[in-house]
Image (cartoon, rainbow, N blue to C red; front, top):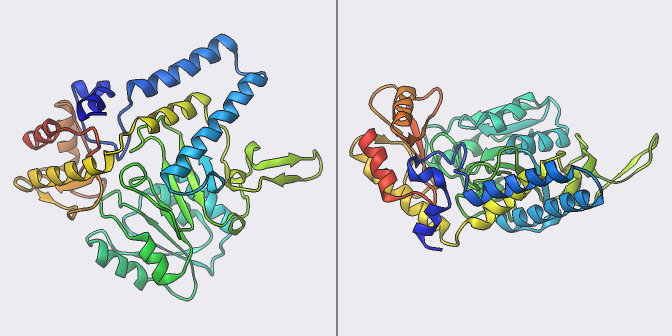
Length: 358
């Protein structure tokens, strides 16, 4: 696939400099067609009967295998979820932490991770990393660990500054269970879960899939209890008696995901070209360099696809003004920053439009 062919997958790119995959990735025509085709079948054939159920189960199995490939693991370690927040809640609920237990996290986490942490019964210790680079941030996190720490919960790529944290190094240094929010990494940079314990994925961001899709990697299935069993958690069930949980991470599947969404995300993942990660790095670097002449660039070099910068004027107003000019970015709440997301579909002209508009 050439770059021009890749651009042509996304109709929105014909008029919009789409630099917001950190919130929602652009939808490809083929992805939308897969969703529409399934909805057409649902309308015309109904949503029931053995063929429908068999097709739904096959769609879940196919997507599970693709998510496993994305994280360099096997399907028996993958649960299907509706979001990274969903995955974080599954882990926190399953660990059953108590007030005397501590979780170490950072001040740069999205509410999708921070919310479940602070809603748990555990004590949360916060490392101040918002203004730090990747190496300094790692040291700040380690400094918060005590003998009572039971979990370290961080983003692979911070949604605010775009800094990529070395979760594997953190695991090696601490030996503690690591929960990773992969919302800004899965699909944006190569991911190998390897020694990590729990890793969440968003389907609608860098994977460019439908909303309400995602996944959770669980290394040791027995490390979590099933705190929120869905229909898909059961191997068998005796009414009035007990149920037998499935042997793999499927026991953590969070529930029903629309068949159309399953097929849409499967289609979207299959569209991504082999050269995607190289292109993202190249465009993020180009974007940062181009912005540096006009704004303070917050994101250090050589991170992921996010480029955060401080424009002149109010960040929220700048993002709104850019939107009116068909340049889609977002401001980072509670900061003076604007964030651009550079994907494998990003063109030189997209970057130029952003810089001119800023």
